[in-house]
Image 1 (cartoon, each protein chain N blue to C red):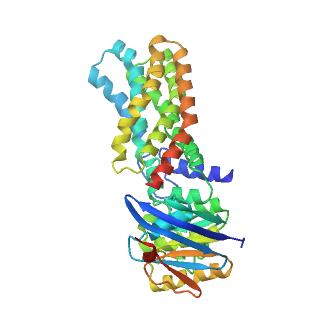
Image 2 (image 1 turned 30 degrees about the vertical axis):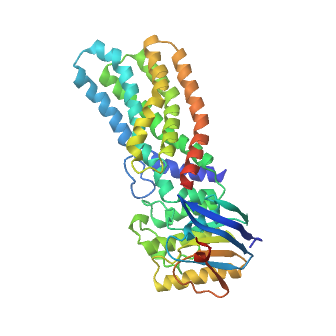
Image 3 (image 1 turned 45 degrees about the vertical axis):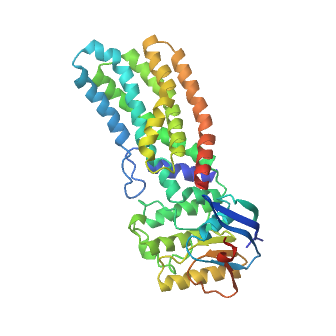
Length: 224
Length: 192
């Protein structure tokens, strides 16, 4: 149990936005958040000051921005630990890859899910989204971001030993995230809770599968 | 120290298309140390990783009784953290304290971020981590790389003390390793 907490504390120190890692700065932790807000800020400039259009499409833009922001931290999710021999040392201590990944999914989600939900408040003001849509976007992000975190970890594990993994992982995440986007953002146009429930179901399945898929990928990378 | 044993039977290692060595057997009892010698690329590191269980042998099997401590070219310390904090992560996991701060000359590096440490200093830090882990079986891959003569002597003394306390050590190194009762295995004799 204490190993779990030790791992989680390290992961949070590395991943949380603005965290200093308990010492010198590893850096880049604020980037996804700033990227997300930048998209929300640029969109009105691009389509013009048409309030009804912005309000109608704003929810979808927030979803796309959230998805793209989730891609940014992928290259430092697992690859540095692999390169620096952490996974070898954990394996020798009987700490399985599955456990490390499960903890990291949680830390990764905590580092971008809730902050994005918070950042959605100013973003919705920039886009002129009304209260009901904002509620659906927030609920959708709550349901969908754990799934995005799980996809991110799986892809990061699959590309962990590739030299240009960062660019490739971004491309690989997008098709996998489409179902989440369809149901999560789709709930905005249908106004129904059904889409949210489906997005949450996909998220749960992804979160449950992520430790095993990513764990196997990491072991395979080690053999190579 | 707990009873430990490390044995390998008829190992072969395939790297890419190339068979690095075959028909390699070894057996180590408490207090014994083995020096894997041979030129670069002969498969010393691969053998260490096979013995550690981090890599599957192409043929043969390995039996290990007792926890494994591994020292290789990766110190597994967070680059951005001060050395003391980076080591504390492993102290928490191992439930012990990293040993030999003073004798390894790490005391004055406590607050220096790991990324500013030299190769030899990283190696010393990894040695402190290994000593703190208290694993009965030590697998050391090029432990002397980057170490100055004082640190080399200290490393040799650490391994000798570990074995005297009933531990097992396997040292893969192309450099000479001075220690009483060290058996030597020339990997070249098993190469193709």
